[in-house]
Every structure is written in C-alpha cells, then in structure tokens.
Image (cartoon, rainbow, N blue to C red; front, side, top):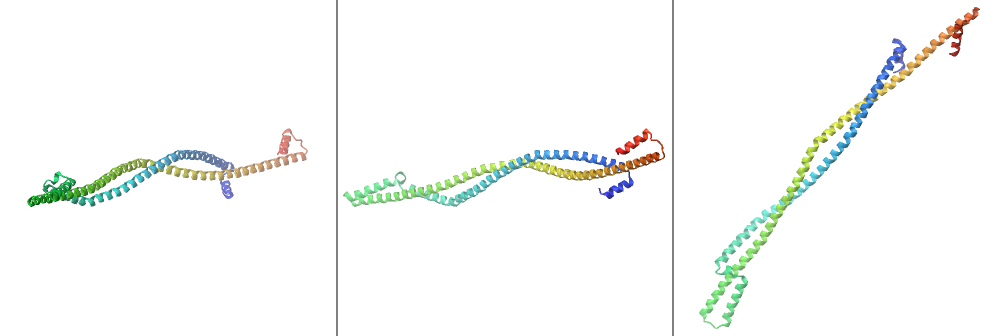
Length: 299
C-alpha cells in the first residue's frame, strides 16, 4: 500500500487499530500461504506418481501400435502375393483343361488302336523291325509279304497312338504340376496371412484395452497441472499481498514508535520545565522529583 493509502487509514482510524488489522491480515496471509504450500507439495507429489504411470502406458501403447503396424504390413504384402498366385492359377486353368482334353483324346485313340494299350513304344519298334527283317531276309509268297506289311502298318498306327498319348500325358503332368504348385503356394500365403492377421488383431485388441487407461491418466495429469497452475498463481498473489502488508506493518510500527517517542519527549520536556520552575522558586525537590529527573536523563 502507498503512503497516501496509509495516510487515509490514519485519518479515519487510530494507528494501533490499523496496526492490529494489518497484523491480523498478515497472519491470515501466512496461514493461507502455508495451506497453499501444502497443496502445491501434494499436487507435485501426485504428478510425480502419475507421470511414470502415464509414460509406461504410453510406451506400451506405442509398442503395441508398432507391432500391429508391422503385422498389418506383412498381411498387405502376403495379400498381394496370394493374389498374384491366384491370378496365375486362373490364367493356367484353361491350359490345364486343354492338356487334359488332349490326354483323354489321345487315350481314346490309343484304345481304338488294336493292342497298343498293352505295349510300349520300344516294344512296337522292335516288333516292326523284326517284321521288316523277315520281309527282307526270308523268301515268302507275295500274299504273305502283304500280310506282314499290313501288320507293320497297324503297328505303326499303334506306335503313333502310344507316342501321342505319352506326349499328352507328359504335357498334362508338367502343366498340372505347375498348377498344383501355384495352388499350394497360394494356400501357403493364405495360411501365413491368417497368422499375421491374427497377431495384428491381437495387438489391436490390447491397444483398445489400454486406451481408456491412457485417457484416464492424461486427464488426471491435465487436471493436476491445472490445479497446480492455479495454486501457484494464488500463492504468488498471496505472497505479494503479504509482502505489501508486512511493508505497511513496518511503516506503521515506525510511525507508532515515532509518535510514542514524540509523546515521551514532550512529557519529559514538560517534567523538566516543571522541575526547573520548582528549583527557581526555591522549593526543594522531593524523591519523586529526583526519580523524574533521573528518568529524563535516561531517555
């Protein structure tokens, strides 16, 4: 408070009354500061308890998110690979059907060729060579030669049917093996994809469970910080008010002490004047007068 404020107080109230009020205000402010200090310490202690918990939950949440994102990336990659394998299966499917039809057609031709189904190409070659050698080396009637030539011709048809069936079987087997490999690859990608998808879902569910806890701790931390800010602000204002009040008290005491000293000085001067006049008049000083004189010397 300024000097003008103190003067205004002094003009309406006695200095001791103002001093008493300011002293009471100072005690109230000190009590309030003590309470605010306790509140501030309590809030700081609570923040120190909440912060580590918040950091632990946040770190765990980030760890779970990283795990989920990693597994989700695997799922995305495996989906692309599975799709690629499925596209290849669909593309090769008609070719497999063609080779199957060709094999069945070759099998039909082989079945219609008399005796071809029971002999290999090597056997048929051997039989044909043997018959041709007989025609070359043996003397036989023309009719018999014609019969053998007819048999050779039949065996040549059988050989062609056997070769056609063998080629059709080989083509179908090779293509079907490729088709089967692509199907297995697709299934393998699908199985692995499901495993990673399950892991991703597991991470996600654990994250969902932690989020409410994180929100609770974040809200608690925010509330504590707001309360701490308010307490600090109120503490600073009260401390400033106490400083002003203590300064006013100091000034007030100085004024009261100065006024008391002036009164004391006036009283002594009055007593000294009285004693001087008494001595001048020829009167004797009493013991009480001497005590008054000693008191004035000590002042």
